[in-house]
Length: 71
Image (cartoon, rainbow, N blue to C red; front, side, top):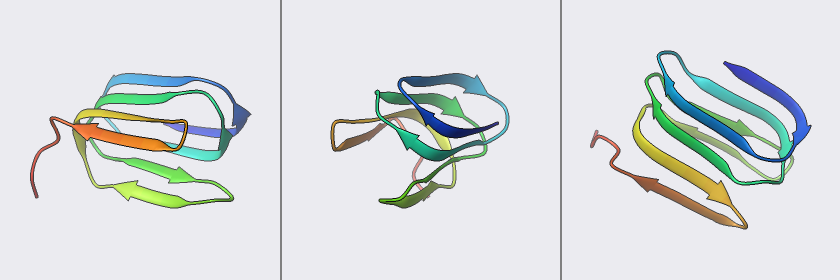
């Protein structure tokens, strides 16, 4: 799944593919159980997680990852 542009809150749960966020998102971002990874692309950062079997939350300058499998 790819979400592009500008926006507020983004929440994705139990995705069998991957998630790409391309743009500026200002609300909290949560991703739970995204099988093929999460990728953030913005003016400030490019981040990539190969897989997110657990929980990812980003917002207000914080990034929290929990229950993710070790690689």
